[in-house]
Length: 292
Image (tube, rainbow, N blue to C red):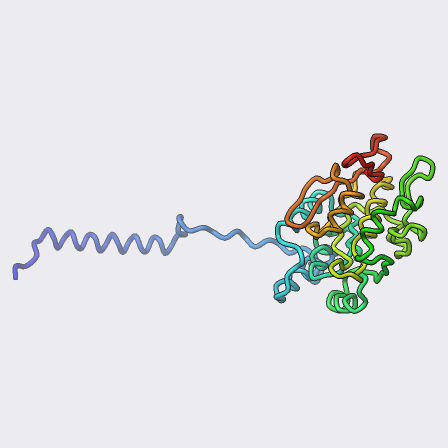
């Protein structure tokens, strides 16, 4: 075999020396192409103070809950996003939720610094959710209505003066208004003593004849929104609008003219107080709608 030439030998030695010098240089200096980690931030708060804000603690509880359960909220992602847009814009707020459910820790956590209150009609379910999520502020309430009487109530409620807005009678009261079969007249005092910026109507049950249905919840939400004295409108969300009763009562009391959004089976209403409305009554098919 022919031995390598003197030129090849010298070139190889030069390449080896150059490579050795390059490696040594790189080992002594940081690599310019690799991203550098920023310096660690200073920890100034005292140990254990990280969850002091109530909103952070609630958010942590919700994250752990949903990360460790296979049970998902009743509403879809698109439906939750519709409500979240209002929460992002208005929180901290006063949020009244009709019903306890798998999504209750979520609504509580999404209103940091605000007040979130839940109303539940099922005693057994109330115990289950309160045991699992004791941080929730919830009340056990009773309804006088039955789903199988929803059509009758809708056809006859105008015969009860205490159920209908009027120039002489003024706005219908909710608290203590036992004369109106649609009024939730006996709720905890704090429900009446606060104005609610947002109401979520996802209860009571409305899928069998003897269930309470959401007739009274819808009427009460509409009456509260009409009577608002504070700034802004009342955001009302009604779930399960694919069902006959929810849809009919929404059209009668929450009013199509105030509907501002929808997603899936959820409708969003922005209802102004009656003090900021024009003196007119909406009609549908030639029939007046006193709440609209």
